Image (cartoon, rainbow, N blue to C red):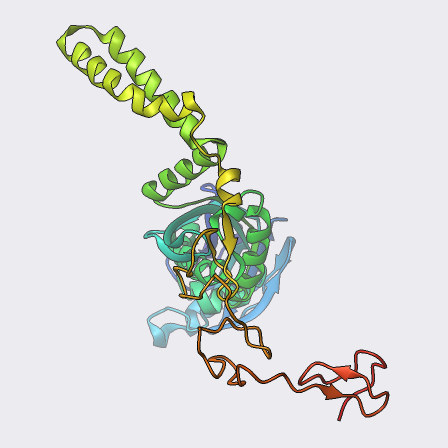
Length: 376
């Protein structure tokens, strides 16, 4: 490059061999005496920003550019004698890589708490990948890279991961109702989360070029509970399923052999009459028969046995002896007033007469059931 030499002009260019550098500064040792007429070559995937006298003075796109500074070959060295032959007209060029940096990984370091509508409070782990690119080189240098000579994705990846996880916690709480809604929702969640993160990235001159969720998983014990629930949903008749399992256990015990197998087979054989008695005699009741033997309590609307005299949930009397003429509440023998509305037990309800058509209406009616006009 010929930086800080006496006569030769500089030819500045940069190649990213690692593929992970966001920014690279020339000269690498710090600022230099870039001379008037130095050549700058910028590639299509790059942008260059020249800092002169401590300030960003110009930005360059793809192509070859001629730099203009106050450093004149030979003359500048002579005039720099008071400063130890080092010119105070310092200059440096920052190359910014504008390509898309892919396959940056993010994930929850610790499980995050999530209130599931069906499972209750569970802890989730989430993982994925995201892509970034620099869209505002000067803002990126001034706010994030500063005066660093190199800045790679490894230096910013950890910070961006924490930002993504922080936004994910709030986003899941707002948008996700239960874990059972997750299948088929990853793309929708990733798109919504990416929009929420756009402002966080733009503060540093970066753009989130893509965010993908690869997994959102609960702890192992929650996964086992979900598996058990799915198995139960497949079983139509639990009684037949239990009997089948018992028969399979007996068959296995019978083929096991030895004293242990004989003892287990003998024990299961003694349990057989009780387990299959209802099946053979037809004494067992199906779920539909049990539903037929229940009624709904008129007070609390819970299902109770059909022959119950009182509701086991609210204590409401099921055998109707006398009802309130005003609200229909069951009255105990000898009651003089209704415990619900306070109406006298033996008094007939007051009939509301429509002032327009003089038709009789129920007590407290607002509109007439004959002419439809408002009463009162």
